[in-house]
Image (cartoon, rainbow, N blue to C red; front, side, top):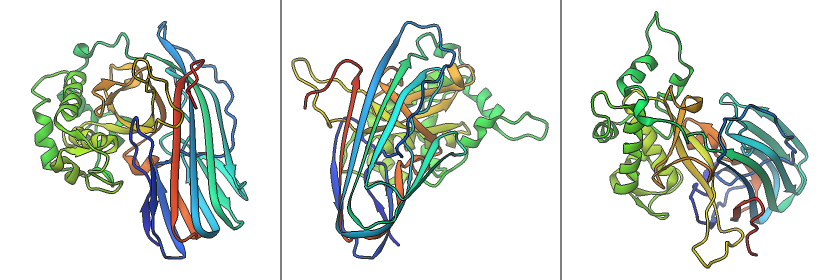
Length: 352
C-alpha cells in the first residue's frame, strides 16, 4: 500500500490533481472535504452579546475518476462544521454517488464528527457534494490582547507538576507527526516572545512575521513535506504556515491546535464571484486563558485573527488529524481529482 497525497489545504484557489498508482490496493489520504449524507438540525446555544454576525453557505464538490473500476473502498471523512457559541450550524448535508453500502458516524477524541463509509460495488467515479450553512459571530471583537497573561505564566500552567491541576489544553503542547519539536523553530519564535510579553500579542506578532517573511507558493511543498523543509525555504501554503506557527509555539512549551475550515473570499471591485473558485483553508488556535473559549485563532497565511470570514470544520494536533477524506481502495489504477468550492454570504449567490 502506498500513501497518495491528494490536495493540500489552500485558500482562495481551486485546483485539480492527478496521480499514478499501478498497484491494485491503494491507501488514500486527502484534504478534500467530504462527509456522509446527513442533516444537522439547528442547535440552540447561548450567543455572545455582539451585533457582529454573518451567515455563510459553503458548497464543496469532490470528483474522483479512476482508470479502472475500484472494487472496494473504505473512506473516513471529516466534514461536519463544529458548533459553538460563535458558530451556529443551521444546515449540513452531503450527497455521495455511488451510494455507500455502509455508513456510520462518531465523535473523535477532539470533538470532531467523523464519518465512515464503504463502497462495496465496482465504480470508476466518486462524487461527494457537501453543503453547509452557518451563522458566525465575531468572538474576538472585544478581546483585549494586551490584557492577556504573560506567555511564561501560560507555559508554566501547561507544564507538568505533581501537585498542579491538569490543564486539558496541555495535550496540544507536545510534538505530533507533522510537527516535531525543532530548535530552529524555538529560536525563530523567541524574537516575538520577549520576556513578560502578553501571550496574545506575542502570538499575533509571530503569526504576522510568518506572513511577512514567508512566501505563499502552491508549488513549493506537498502534503507530506517536512516542516523543516518549508521553514528553510521560507515558502509554502496555509498548511505549512500553520504547521510552522504551531511548531514555534510548542517549542516554547505552549499549546496550539491545527484548525481546518474555509475562508470566505470576495471578488475584486467590479468582478463577480465565480462558483468553484474557493478552496479549503487552515489556521492555528493558540491556548490563551483569557480569550473567548480560551483559544485565540490566528491565520498566518493572511495575517489576521479568525473572524466573520472563517468557517471552522475540525481541530487536531496537525493536518493528519483533520485530513477530510482518507481511506483504502482496491483497484482503480490511475486516478484524477477535481475539487470545486464556493463560499458565499447567504443571499449573495456566486455566478456560474
